[in-house]
Length: 210
Image (cartoon, rainbow, N blue to C red; front, top):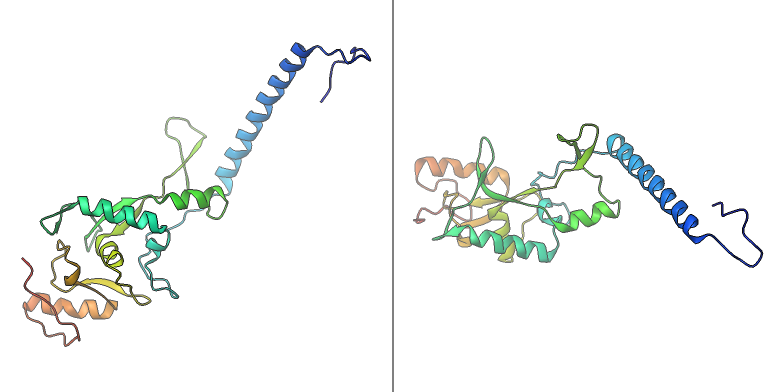
């Protein structure tokens, strides 16, 4: 950085002029950093699919819940309780072919991982400002049965899915839910249609749900 050339040997400096130079250089540097950030967002961002509900091979925990800290899982359960009225789900239903009682939540831990560079940032163009990008919030869809079972200390095996033994997806009674394989869960569809348990599974279907 160049200082004033005609300063004396006694250290006399035109501090006002120096401050103006520093302010100008700071503005230029700030604009340059913003340009570099825009270029990085435009070229090096990735789209990450966090909707995978399969379980982790080592822990058996659904991957969408692995993304959360214990405190965030507790917060998910607290929010879920607010949507349960009379033992039934009164919240939002997500899904296309098979609707699931669930709701969206963005874990703060994922924001922290982004800041540390452990996760790629998901960016979308700004509608109001052409040429600029903004961070898209990572709202995850959390199936309600997963949250209730995990909170009740019932842990899945790898690749298990949450099954409603009573065939009532609005039911929030943990005793009516169980972790089981996807194939077992599909076999229970015959029981639901016939309104009689004929699947032959160790844990039989229930039809006492009100």
